[in-house]
Amino acid sequence: MTGIRLAGVSKSFGGKPVLKKVSLEIRSGEFFCVLGPSGSGKTTILRIIAGLERPDEGKVYFGDRDVTDLPAKDRGVSMIFQSLALYPHLSVYENIAFPLRVRKTPEQEIKKTVSDVAETLRIQSILNRNITSLSGGERQRVAIARSLVYRPQIFLMDEPLTGLETAFRQELRREIKEIQRSTGITTVYVTHDQVEAFSLADRVALLHEGVVQSVGEPQQVYERPENLWAARFVGDTPLNVFEASLKAAGDEAVVKVDELGLAFRTKVSRIPSDGRVYVAGRSEAFKLGVEGFLTGVVVGREVLGDRVVYTVDVEGRRIVVKAAAYIDLKPDEKVEIGVDLDKLMIFDGEGRRL
Ligand SMILES: Nc1ncnc2c1ncn2[C@@H]1O[C@H](COP(=O)(O)OP(=O)(O)OP(=O)(O)O)[C@@H](O)[C@H]1O
Ligand SMILES: [Mg+2]
Image (cartoon, rainbow, N blue to C red; front, side, top):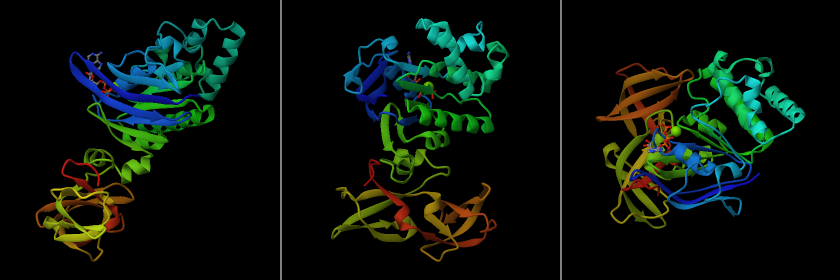
């Protein structure tokens, strides 16, 4: 297995920058996800790792080896493309066997390898079928099988579960995770779906407009994102963001959120010179029915199952609060809101975390 390092990788297409000085370190054996909206440059990162695209600037390393100019075929990388690209005129068996045939593997070995991989992915019963007769989910498995047969050093997956129904996605997701764990192949998995990224990844990188915004374990990226964009992008409810001021007070700082009439002391990594900051809190940073700082009126209610998301009007400001389902509030009801100060995030005027 091998680690991957992108060092200051930039790429433009037709004068339009698509990746801007992307630096990432993917550890050997790691399941690494790149999460970002459509057009953020995810596929381009994978194609550069695979050697299908050359960076305009910057270097790509596998372990200590500079592979920036190494042809794709010599990289030991297997990639599942966003469009699956199976061979429709070949059977499932021949599709899976294809990478081995290209490498002139003996027939006996091909048989054994295909059969082993087919067993792992539970597709033994469809090996003789035509690709065109398969469902989307079956095709997905065949594509994964094909990319696994020759034991790549690095496994690249570009949104392999897009377009599948939810239950099946969850099942395949667990299988992909299991295959990665048991093979230990360094894997880079690209998706725009944060549930997918968070459930699969050892670590995740958030990408926006070709710039890496935040990198870390899923929990870390959720709780301590590097900037306001990353904070807003993750989470299943809209982020509550307030303008505020911050002043040094001994080795701490005092933060004032005027529009909420809220002031509190906290530790920050630095004090921005103009003192203007943003205070952001996820819906779970606020607690309904707890005597606290704020009083509001319920204006919206959305049931998520065991949780309910309320929109509460606090003096003209909307705050989104997640509550347990047993807290049953009706529209127009008056409610007290407590704030969990430890869960508030503070960003400077440019949106960088403090
Ligand atoms: N070969 C190319 N020629 C011109 N523009 C390209 C090329 N490849 C990618 N782009 C552009 O670069 C940007 C990033 O593309 P990329 O495919 O990496 O995004 P993505 O994050 O994978 O998006 P999606 O989630 O939609 O797949 C897009 O604006 C795309 O149109
Ligand atoms: Mg893409």
